[in-house]
Structure formats: structure tokens, C-alpha cells
Image 1 (cartoon, rainbow, N blue to C red):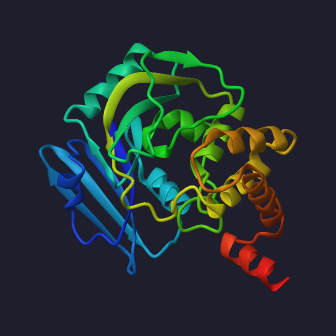
Image 2 (image 1 turned 180 degrees about the vertical axis):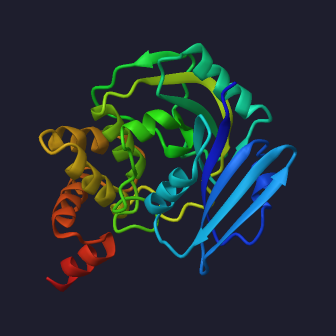
Length: 272
């Protein structure tokens, strides 16, 4: 029988109340960013919860920390604003049993945010990716041994709390693709995300497009313009004109080269 655990990044937790908030009924590892260093375990309903609390900053670093402590066969990345369906462990394990060649499976999440709605899939199938991979980490389940063999880790430059505030999941998936791991998307829904606790998303603004430019700079060096045009055309009903969206993505490209955050780059623009 396959074993399962959730790998959740969180902040400033002093207890295991997230178990109830997130409706977790399985083994779980919390990588908890706080102002202290500690390790705690809690047993509940035959499951084990681990809380690794450190002062390390950045979602990529803390996802790596959770990965280092992971031991079960199948793991599911999590953010702490997800509430899971009751039988999430059974759903995820069954999909890996049905598709035994899968290294990674992308699941559906509902959203309470009317603007930020994850793309929904209605059919489970194997995918051969050529371009975009529009999946946040909280949708990703994987075989731990496959990830270990591929030596796959998260970038510590990208993601909430990092120099560049988003894109760590896209880079991780891109690296998984380069290492020839097998991907499936599933029709199954595993929970609901609220996005209420986002540490970086402040809307469709200059910072968002700057971040996209940084990500495209590292992922798509030869096809940068194609991805910029695609991203600029995606959102029609926003306040930023098309030309300005492209400008800020190119600013992101320059900022990535100079290792400048959005705030640092914006300050430099104003000074000049």
C-alpha cells in the first residue's frame, strides 16, 4: 500500500491548528517560517504531523526543507490557504495506482477568488508539454523516489519572500520536464484554495508583469518574446495598457540580469 503525506509551507505557526483549518486527515509536514528554530511532532487519528520551524525566508527554501524531511511514497505540495476534501489521500493514491508510470500528477483545485481561478481539467490524461505549465505548487503530487532520483529542488531566487516573488513552481516543473519525468493531469478535485494569504500577489499590476519577465528570462531565453506576447494578450479587462505590460516584462528581464527586486528596479527608474 502506498503511503502519503502533505508538504505544506506556512508562516508563524505556534501549534497544529492548521490541521483543522485545512481539513488534513493524513501525514503532514509543515515547513514553518518564523522567528525561532524548533521541531515538533503531533500524532492524530493514526497520522503524524511534523512542524519544522526555522528563520529561513522564502517559499522555495521552505519547500526544499519539507522535501528533505519527506519520507512517504506519494507527496502533495500544499499552501496553507487550501482546504482539502475529506478523502484527498485516497483520491491522490488511487490516481497513482491507476497511472503507474506517472511521476507527477496535477490535480484540480476550486477557488473562492472570482479573479484567480485555477484552470479546471475534466479528463485524466498523460501530457507531453511543449510550452506553458500553468500549475501552482498546491496542485502538484509526486512520487518521492522519482524526485529524489532526479535531484529536483526549488529555486531559492523565486517565490514569496524571495528576490523575485513568483515563478518557483513553474521553474520546478520546467526542471522536472527537462529531467524526463512523466506528467499526468487529473480530473479529480482535491480541495479549495482561497488565495487570501498571498504574500506577493497584489493584482494585475506592474509588479506582476515584472515578475513574469524575470521568470521568462530564466526559463525561455530563446523564446522570451513569444511568452511575453502571450502573457500580454491574456488579460483584457485590466488597467495596464498592452504596451506597458510588455515594457514591464522587459524591465523584469533587465532586473533579473542585475539581480534587482521589483522595488529596487522601480527605485532605480525613478532616480534616473
